[in-house]
Image (cartoon, rainbow, N blue to C red):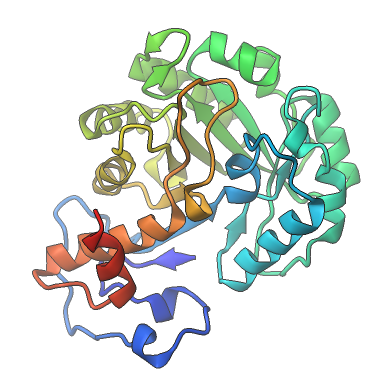
Length: 312
């Protein structure tokens, strides 16, 4: 899903939902207002859907593989370009992901969609390859103690495993850690740099426990972008304190054009007590539409967006 923050927000052009005509009407503008901080050469925002993996992993009731498969297929049909499918992690640590092989075998893959899977260690990587994964995600954390507890291996081990596949990197705890507290932006830059050196095509910066504020997010991105080009960065926000959308706006202003989100705001973190779900994909769509409409000095033309934002 690619959204254009420099032109009028359009559900019809950015989604392939079969919506009633009243909900798919768009307006054209002859000239969009260019934001001082926006990169006109990169006018589109890509949405990376993480619901099937990051969203469901913390659910205590085991969800049937058939339901997960259906969810992934429906997200594919909605037009999302990236759907994070599952995680090849030990069922002992994350029981919800114990059916990863079955899920990968059951989904209907679109040639235009990427289905990355999380591989926290060598065993998970081998299982993902055997299951036909074409893209994997690896984790590093700006907090060493979180990395140890989250994937049961050190930062160094967690970023050394790759086998010629397309690799996406994650940096967790970019502004705060449940074990170490506030995180130095330079620590985030160091881990992101190591992931980039391994060949990760994209590095997602995660506010894993949702404690970040826009000023902290901007400072962190500024530090990381001195090591890794902002074109290779994504933002991943949890909404523990209701700051996820504000933090995403700050990221857009800082030049980031890839946003991770989770359908229905599903998610949390099994190793971060009290952390709530990921920012909802639906809210990101409405929020970005409201953002560009504000910049253009007009109300949003999306009825869905108006309905969602009226409740806030």
